[in-house]
Length: 224
Image (cartoon, rainbow, N blue to C red; front, side, top):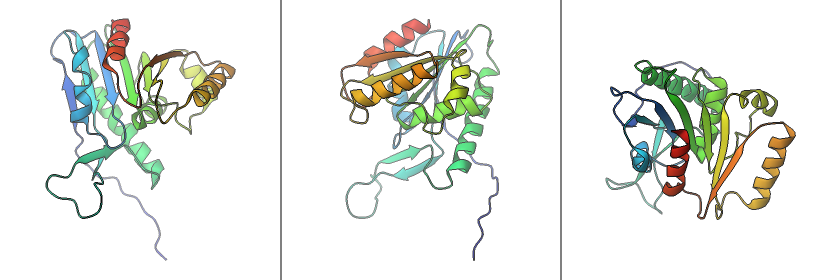
């Protein structure tokens, strides 16, 4: 019978930057994409808030794959996406991306004055659960968490979250036509947050399961 084993290996992770890390930075964003996206594409969503004094960091999930396009083998023009994890060996994958994001955070913040820089962490869709786990399990520190098209991770300890969100501002953002979250589900989630004493804000926009640049601009103005 085969026995499962693990070994830690070194690998290269990719991320994209908007802004000049050598400038005086007062507003830092870490933005994690959703399932099947690439950081290069997701970063374009943030061009609308790219301005002096702001640094936007867009990491990419460690696992890439060819997106399905019907039957047949993938070819040179097949689209590629990335994922933060799957259910297979999930605990190791979560530990890997928490460590990866901590290392990236330290590298970015090393050259900045943390006392002058407000840190916003945004997670879209699958990236929402990713950043939720990262901030509660890792060593990075944020001032604000934006869960966009996503709720807190299903394995989140809401009792611990009640303490965590006394220091980190929680904002939940979703489209009113999001196919992955109806009004009843959101209402039930809000009731749970209130029951646990977790402070939060809700921001909505007219649309589906996507980013919305007008809403993003407004949230960026509040961070300034």
